[in-house]
Length: 296
Image (cartoon, rainbow, N blue to C red; front, side, top):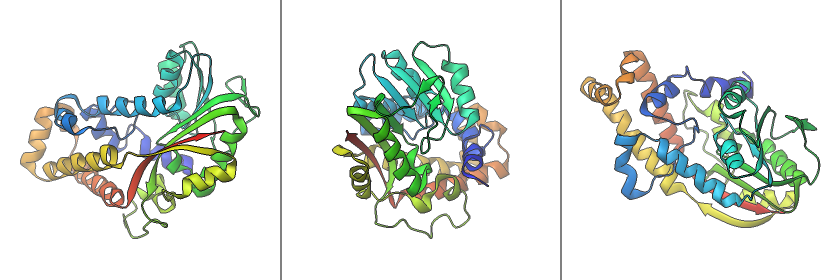
């Protein structure tokens, strides 16, 4: 199965994980979310969507995009961050390798002034997309939120090269990514392969190698911010609580009472989602969550 097919399967609305997350109020952003300690208990009331929006706001704030800027939103998914950039007065092009995601982005935001969407590989961009020429030095900003770990090591190198090529002098690239704590990622996690193929966890970039790769592409590193605690660690605790609760019949009844849509899951689906959550938790123990700000 190719990368695009793996991603389509992992992010599809019919995957058991996304079915559960949708019932919990998971937003169209499809990111992990940013959880401050005082607000963590609110997840039971609001679901994860406000925390996902908070993460998107923080990522876009690092971009420092101004009205009139031309911005590439790489791995835009269903288009939410691209639409936010357009709403702020930017000319925003969202690209994603998954046609189904771009279809949704166009349906949701395609009529908004300043927002365009195209199916394109951010590691090997075409000469133009959505009617915009992707010429050297033509963009002011490039943004990539929680997508680059899908690219693989060589893909990330190519993405950094492409971003530097596109950006004008004084331009900025923001990459928010899952990174490895060690020089080499662990290879003995998720032995059943529930998530490691789609997420490419065997090929996660080590935390401190990103700036070296960016420097090789021509960038200067402005900031490196560790968001492991508010993103991965707190999300892991929440998912552990969910999996523990879902492991018993009484717990599943309680979850269904709070989120009635979960009642559509049969026992097999519950067992699958618990296994997927625990696979993510195992990999989360050896990863970090990092925001990088690079400049030209």
